[in-house]
Image 1 (cartoon, rainbow, N blue to C red):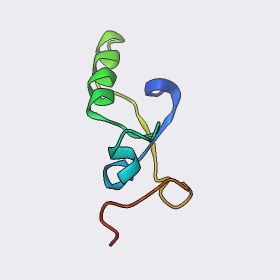
Image 2 (image 1 turned 180 degrees about the horizontal axis):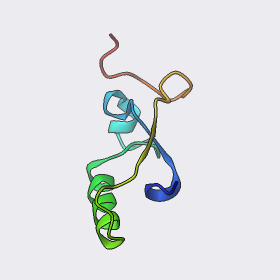
Image 3 (image 1 turned 30 degrees about the vertical axis):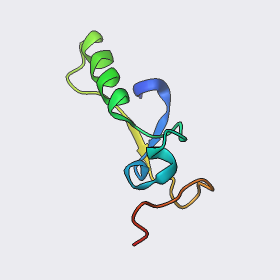
Amino acid sequence: MISYKDMTFCLAGDNCKMALQGQCHRYFSEDHRERARKWADSCGMGSTPVAWSDFSKSCSYYQPVDPE
């Protein structure tokens, strides 16, 4: 299956200090969201296929915003 940017984005990005500071290439930002929507529209897709995974347990850069 094809997905946006042919990569997997992190589900934990909104709770990661590094991602919110722009230091993570797997963070799905608002800019990504808008670009993904435009890409899907240009291809005639009704929705944007985005691959997701929780990298928080395996990422050495993960720093939770809310530690609980």
